[in-house]
Length: 570
Ligand SMILES: Nc1ncnc2c1ncn2[C@@H]1O[C@H](COP(=O)(O)OP(=O)(O)OP(=O)(O)O)[C@@H](O)[C@H]1O
Ligand SMILES: Cc1cn([C@H]2C[C@H](O)[C@@H](COP(=O)(O)O)O2)c(=O)[nH]c1=O
Image (cartoon, rainbow, N blue to C red):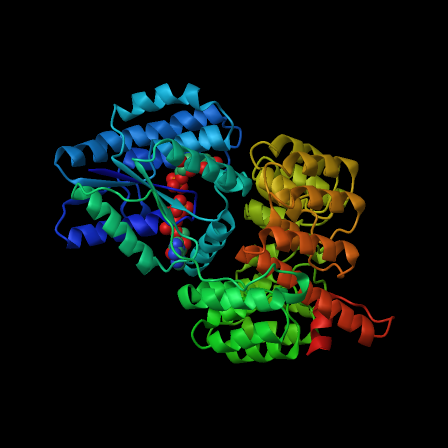
């Protein structure tokens, strides 16, 4: 029997297909998993996969990509799947030709009918007996995937071609999978993976598969787990705090790591109470969740956690620049030099330079460069020169972040041939001639980065690009973070249905005036059942409350940064 797992990235295919394999083997079945532990068994298929993921190959068109993906599946079929089925085993795959149809038709927009004959050729007539579609909210899948990367030490992995397209691709691919399942209900089972513990899903899956293996009828196509009951009524700004923490506490029982991850950067007592409850069990995640917070409780927690998880504490400092942060960075340097040095962005103070000099002496030139973004003094150019001599092109490019000077532009020109994506990232917030040209060149292949590089840019060209990108992917909305101009509000309003969680998070840092409140109310009433929406809405409200509090207590002449406001609250 041939069983294939399909679903968007981060949906849980690898986890669940491996759990199923292990269970079936324990039950005495002979099983081959063609991608055991997430690794394709055929070396040829693995090489082809590397090619399709290579972020330098951004000009690869959808047809070339399709044929490469077909080649990968055809090779897996010949080398692994067909021989296993011939031996009479259960053969399990983690993606098959359905993925290529969903990506190329649903994701890239080619006509499915034109693709089918090529799929038939690649399949040699061998199609799965059972397809398990692991279906998940794309926002949740992305969060889980990012958390998984962090926990396996891959947080700094650079994006593959797939990652550069933007989050909208997953939404379109998911729709395409659901359509395939709808058209072929006897072959496809939908396993929803939004709010159930893995143990429970594994059990449902084993039962369904064993029923098939034993030739029993499959009663339903969609295995819908019973969701936890939400609070009654429609969510609103006034009860978003209660609803968010109700949903978060429900999640804590199943996925505590994700629950702590969702507290990232959220100020206020209820969030701190949860951090304290988890500080012993998940110290690293708790430390990271303090990103950007500058209140007394945050500092106490950092002090407590610093000896056991110094890297996470350093990462969780974000770009806080208060005197307390200098003192802590100096103490953390010995155990977490790279994280400390990378956290110095935009800091040109003597304390920051003292740390950088230590970093250079200790051989951390790459990390010093990464923490040099936004710094333009003569000393910074000496460091960049050293980076060029050592061929640290990506790091030098990132060190130019936010600089629009002629000198920075000239160095970007040199770096283009080495690493154009890092150069693109360094243009965030700028509208230099080089930034404009690069955005046009990369709009097709790296839409996510192009849109993010527009963050804060308020020019007609930037708005045209965002408006073109918004129907395709949510990063168009990321780029209006904190913007309070009419075109930003129009884009938010027209995208609220497609990208609700991102529309909401783009209002972070804005005061809770009539416009903010109205849009929050609208999204909450339409999509307030989604945890990412609730989380982002609460973050907006919690931060706006801090702003209001500060406006009441801080003298008008005092600068009101959000970091500063944290202290007022405490
Ligand atoms: N129900 C769940 N509860 C807790 N964690 C989950 C659940 N489902 C998936 N995860 C976690 O989500 C992350 C992504 O899962 P997994 O790698 O299995 O997805 P995938 O579909 O194979 O992704 P990709 O196609 O990108 O490889 C993993 O860290 C996994 O542990
Ligand atoms: C480049 C690219 C690929 N995909 C699809 C194509 C394949 O079906 C899978 C490969 O994923 P895996 O990491 O090997 O499981 O993903 C895509 O969806 N988007 C892309 O840009």
